[in-house]
Image (cartoon, rainbow, N blue to C red; front, top):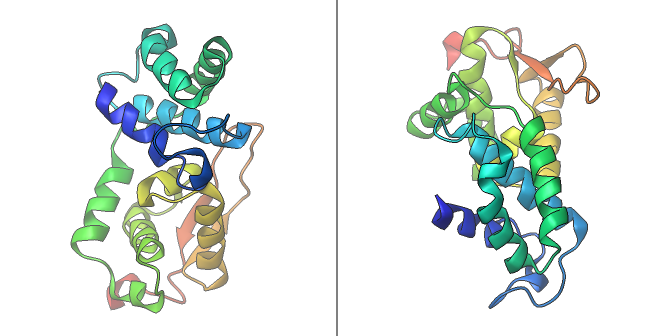
Length: 193
């Protein structure tokens, strides 16, 4: 598990390449540290072996990450513990199943987009919608297709704008409720794909 964690720290920094070359060359921006810690928290919540562990059991891993990022380990652990407590897990594995289906048999309608990650996200939404409506947070979507959450949010809005998805209600950040979506059967009937 530690080797996977050590991969995440540089991976999460792709948006800020000036920070990572042969190690951190300067203190990373706060947003970058935040993104890395959210990604670690979601990774631990996703794994059945670690999702129910107390955050204190990840102290060593977070200390290593903090050392790599050249940031205060105590503050970094406190930030991580907060994120781990707030992170949600997909206990039924629906997101992973939808991703596997989208990779194995992408719906033909995904061809309308050029970006392969955007195509994959639309395919994931297509398969998630098999069970009627579904919740999908932009951060979870970003993790599924390996992009940043702003891009994932933009793509999800484009799916609504392009009539693939319909928003059901509104997301509520205060209640930690992701946006709920439904497939737009009127514009894109499932039987046609």
